[in-house]
Figure 1: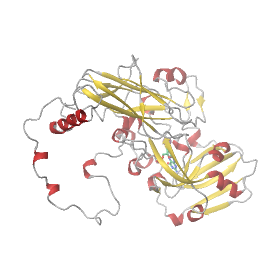
Figure 2: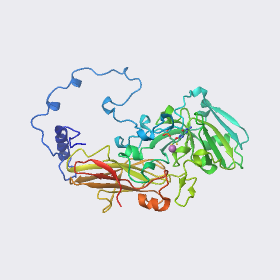
Figure 3: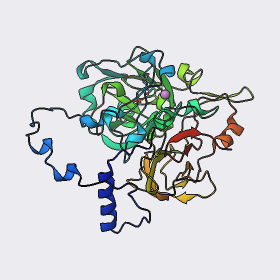
Figure 4: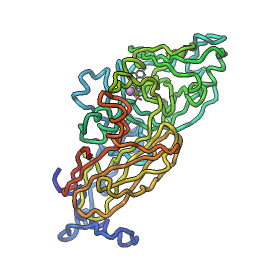
Length: 424
Ligand SMILES: Nc1nc2c(c(=O)[nH]1)N[C@H]1C(S)=C(S)[C@@H](COP(=O)(O)O)O[C@H]1N2
Ligand SMILES: [Mo]
């Protein structure tokens, strides 16, 4: 990028005034170029002040401002040879807070988006139960339901970075994640309704899409906190997120969150299907493979500044922000460094701290205009601390794709541009 400011000088001048007026603690100046003469955006009547805007009948279902059209899910061309069994990425660098808007949740499909009507869907429970059952969607809505906020992270998130820094943007390095308020029926209630036998220790969840994707889930987890979810962020699931019903497996790898959930089979051993043998296992250097690595380890990433969101102002007050999450609990603390780990600062957490949900952190600093090396390091509520990529490689080797939760580094140059790098 160039050093062209994103905001007009007059806007920055206005911000500088605001900072003085509110006695902002930052010591640097927000202005590094003075506007010459009066700003027509303030002194002249603008078109939007002279004509009536759209009425309430124009957008029965609202969409983002047309000025935000760049805020979209994106694909990586070399990863997306086949769009129906592929992936797109959440634009983390454009988001704030902790909730991912429904239209920006990344998608991962093995056979494209299944198109199923609410009335045509059935959920079946078979195997080690007293009563094999089939539920319609309306049947499911007669069970008590709960509202809970969880992140879903694909185990392959950051997988392209195992061998070295590769993709320039947190959307691509870390965007296989979304964080949504789910409404769903506790899976436990459906299993109780079917009369779960004590011999039933494993559950196979199967999707109704053409891939018929399946995963084995241990019964302790199924009875603990799993949901059979019908709603996300208050509205019914989006088709691409599994409409009309998906499994929610809090804190565990995204692949287990079966979409278009059509069948739950109860058994007494795992099924060893494709997604838990050839996929979603980690081949170690000695040839052994880690299996059943369900829980997502604590992880964080700085979303701003980052390669797709460079610093667009000169030296002075600068806001750094990012997100952190853990499949084992909450994130009480995130550390941030701007000098490649020489000094660490405790970031400011802002927003709700919910179990197995995304957390938001901030670190405000005075940029001196010199190059920076940015990193964040999450601590979760179990005391676990996010490792460096090199620490992970010592244990896992270089064959892995999945479960890379290593510390991410962004290098910032004098122009404010950011690049994905690794430092020793
Ligand atoms: N039925 C079905 N469920 C599925 C998949 C699929 O292809 N079919 N993909 C899985 C994978 S690998 C992930 S990471 C998550 C992605 O969920 P999302 O599309 O809501 O982001 O769904 C999982 N559930
Ligand atoms: Mo995945």
